[in-house]
Amino acid sequence: QSVLTQPPSASGTPGQRVTISCSGSSSNIGARIVNWYQQVPGTAPKLLIYNNSYRPSGVPDRFSGSKSGTSASLAITGLQSEDEAEYFCATWDESLNAYVFGAGTEVTVL
Amino acid sequence: QVQLVQSGAEVKEPGASVKISCKASGYTLTSYHIHWVRQAPGQGFEWMGAIKNPRGDTTDYARKFQDRVSMTRDTSTSTVFMELSSLKSEDTAVYFCAREFPESHYFDHWGQGALVTVSS
Image (cartoon, rainbow over all chains, first blue to last red; front, side, top):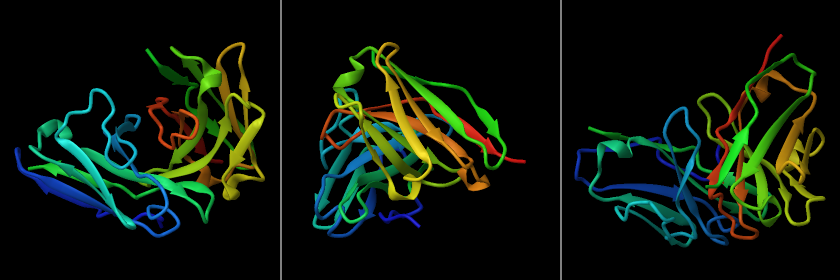
């Protein structure tokens, strides 16, 4: 059971906008920055969004992140076939004294 | 370029220990923390702990693993090690090392992962 709650799946057609939510509490998202990782099955995760809304160099600007209160979200605009992957939110939890992850959202491009 | 290269897959019996290595290149090991995160088959990620650089003798372990995990480093080879003891079948997972710039709270580079299978 993950501390951060994400929908298990999301989908869209090429060019559409897909949004993934990540819900937490006052001891994690409410108190800390949120990061997002992308993982293609069988490979290592890749940092997609850090500090709630910043993109590392090389990440396309169709990926964006936001945070409000105890929730965060990742948006993919102009969905492309190569965006098919699993997406995880993550942050530090002050009560657990541990870095915590969402269970992941599998994005399918129809 | 920055790389974290981990040791290979391991098969262990219940009760045994496993030691996984993570060799860093392309940057100065002591400038970043190294975290260990595992992913059981079909599951999400679970944070195990970190070895904090430059204070390489400082570790921060998740409560769940405190009694049976040890993280060490060898600066001469730019390698960090994670040893997990008293293995159980539930420890079967892919183990990743990941780099964090101190206090940035995000992992900007990850190792390729090492599959540990615990089975009798």
